[in-house]
Length: 183
Image (cartoon, rainbow, N blue to C red; front, side, top):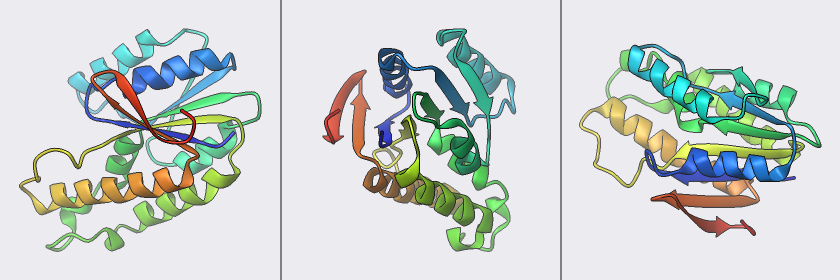
């Protein structure tokens, strides 16, 4: 089954929608978690997400090697949730603060390689795959060049994922709006 991209802002309900779709699939579920608990607040967020999910769902933590992990986990008869693509992108941008001004994504070789690997994998991925990503382009323009680079790369990545996915849903205030596919 082709991949499904679920977009939304912070606390929009996008993860909840992905979890509900996974439950409704009736398939064994694996969550590929990309967040890293680098501070107490993020650790609490990760714990809250984990506590909200059924205990029999598998969780695989992968902050960077998303395509490789997805290739290992996605199978016919299984559902995989990737939560979230935006944090994965942020992980890949580690070290970007050391780029010469203005920062340029072309200088981030690991980001380019991992992004290409993910986009190349999506057309052939098996099973049900639900990709959760933040829509960051609806807010304020970031103050810093690095912030603007992140916003721009997130937008470019979401566009590429939307093109590669058979289904795309935007979530606002907990309400899904189908943008592409049969929802």
